Image (cartoon, rainbow, N blue to C red; front, side, top):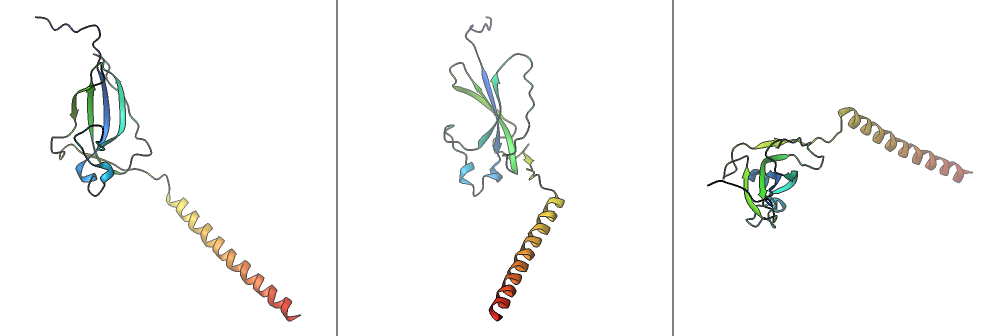
Length: 144
């Protein structure tokens, strides 16, 4: 018996970044639900493309909206009718091993924070200086 596949055979796969259980504590917007439509564990799509027998490699750049927390990767396989037929993940069933952490960057440097503090102090001092001069000017006008 051969394992000939029909001509309409088509598999798609979807790879997503998923929150680890430790990252779901006290965060209902990340909770795991058995129904895929309601599941909020895997919110970040890494790649979605048709399966091919060769060259299934891809490169993914972490987006700026990915928060700092602990993750694992999950891959879903879909048949030609776009029905999920299988999935696999980079961790065990209890989601305790092979987890990794992503640390988001704010893009701010220490020098920017120092400059912001200096400008804030200057603007505050300028405001009080202006108010002092206006009050002094008003007193001089009243004394005349």
